[in-house]
Image 1 (cartoon, rainbow, N blue to C red):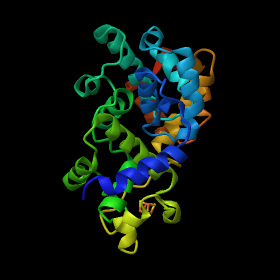
Image 2: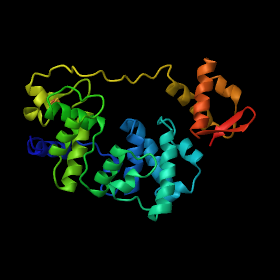
Image 3: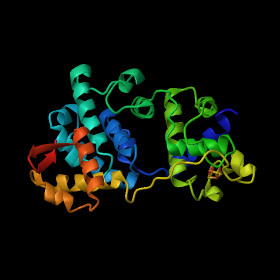
Image 4: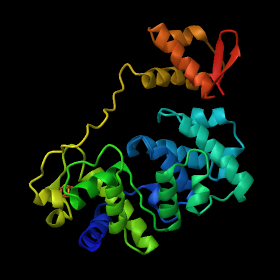
Length: 290
Ligand code: SF4
């Protein structure tokens, strides 16, 4: 299968239906794209948007962010979750200033060497900020390729070699078309080919989709890990961080104790925040963002 059967209808659909998002605007700088990619790693667009706009207003360049403390970056991260991303983005801004003259580097290898930038993020920044040809496999793209290209309801929990080969085979050769293809597949997965209820009747590639043609067979591969939240350490860490973020200064331990009744779990989570460098101890029983 080549990219051609899916490419044109998908790009046409994208032109007409894509959401108007600031990081896709032609005027978005590589730094703006990078900030958006960090924020979107594990957080939906609707929650990212207001925080993204505030960040870019406040720190329009890597140098602006690097001049702040890491704690201020974590505070401004608000409730996006996984606050180590803020810490790493702050560290990456520092390295961009120190090693790249304050400009986000364009090469995949240099991007990949920055704190917090994994394979997906490096490929996404190189594609969307610099129009290069890279396979960009986020969860939405993976689902669209699994269905339309491989005839399976869902991809495997982790990318397989066969999946990467399919993604590579479908990727247009030209860099800017490849970037357009990736963002369009991403958008189709977010808006139409959703995980639970794919709207095949309004899909631009429905007459070329292998999964639809096969009668939408149920997924029978290895189980996907659920995104449990209630009662997890992630929830507890989030509660502790919210108290620290909203405080003007150091917070007494008693205020942290009030947000979670299981003392063992709360202590474990507070220790992990200290170990991650997100929180510092400022007195015998007081804490603050780093
Ligand atoms: S036809 Fe349905 S399953 Fe196939 S890509 Fe479109 S929305 Fe997804």
